[in-house]
Image 1: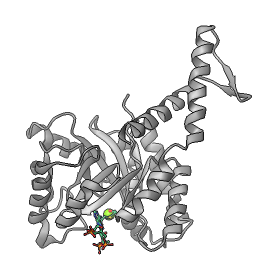
Image 2 (image 1 turned 120 degrees about the vertical axis):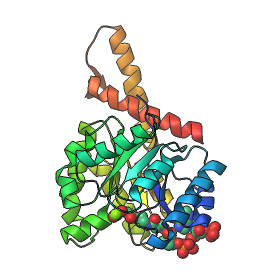
Image 3 (image 1 turned 90 degrees about the horizontal axis):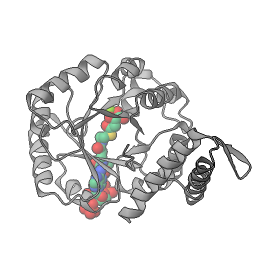
Image 4 (image 1 turned 135 degrees about the vertical axis):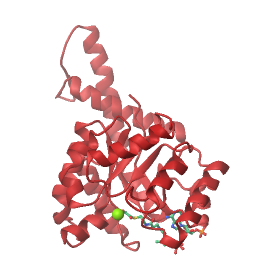
Amino acid sequence: MEFKPRRSALYMPGANTRALEKARTLPADVLILDLEDAVAPAQKAEARANILTALAEGGYGHRELVVRVNGFDTPWGRDDIVAFAKAPISALCLPKVESAAEVSAVVQLLKQEQASPDLKLWTMAETPRGILNIDEVAGADPRMAAIVLGTSDLAKDLRTPHTPERLGLLTSLGMCVLAARAHGLDVFDGVHLDLNDQVGLEQACSQGVELGFDGKTLIHPKQIEAANKAFAPSAEVVERAGRIQAAWQEAEAAGKGVVLVDGRLVEALHVEEAIRILAIDAALQQRD
Ligand SMILES: CC(C)(COP(=O)(O)OP(=O)(O)OC[C@H]1O[C@@H](n2cnc3c(N)ncnc32)[C@H](O)[C@@H]1OP(=O)(O)O)[C@@H](O)C(=O)NCCC(=O)NCCSC(=O)C[C@H](O)C(=O)O
Ligand SMILES: [Mg+2]
């Protein structure tokens, strides 16, 4: 199994060519090239062309590229999917998904377009119905690779205010993490809207880590560092993971099924997590 660092996922409007250019130098793990809400209807076609040009020019290095298309039920959704079905990207991000049937319709279109099986789907969980159906959406198709929280749309629909504690969102956040883990997907927390609130951003990142998210979606380059720091395994965690793996190998060689590390019981499940942490750390070290 491949573990990719996905600490930070920066949205950038496809209509903003400066942002598409600047992204080549930014330390985000994922770039979400947006055709949906950040692009006005009159600019949709231009934004699509800008993104295709930027992808053809390349230069994004290790950054994972994802295109957020418009909803399938909008005038642009189908054409967006066709335009990017064979593009050099990791995934299409589908907004406001509420059912497995919506995922299947996109999968069918990708099949018609002979898209590579490596082109994955990320779905946005950002409506009450989408949250209630997140289990079926997450398990809809083998192309599914990640769930992305759309906390702006969701907060509006739930009529819950944006507060530091995010109490009104906690049930939805937890349900998405559960569904992601049940189906072996990654899961991204929503955006922090106040660009001048660095302390609040750091708190939201810590809360996201605690809730089990793999990374956070972002709207401005100045938010990347906080997410990269919070969602990376700390040096202490990596060091302990290394000791767990080594102790386990020794125990296995001696025919034992359990072992103690720092006086704490280690079983196969801890080793699994240690291997994931070491793989993420190795990928980050290689990048640096
Ligand atoms: C919010 C912004 C409009 C601010 O843009 P700007 O005024 O240009 O900011 P700065 O002058 O501070 O920018 C400094 C430099 O950084 C570049 N920049 C800014 N933002 C980005 C970006 N997102 N990606 C790449 N580069 C960026 C500027 O070009 C400046 O560069 P330089 O020329 O070298 O000085 C803007 O940040 C923005 O548009 N952000 C993205 C907004 C967006 O995508 N929103 C939609 C996604 S959020 C969402 O919908 C989530 C979900 O659906 C939900 O419901 O929750
Ligand atoms: Mg949204």
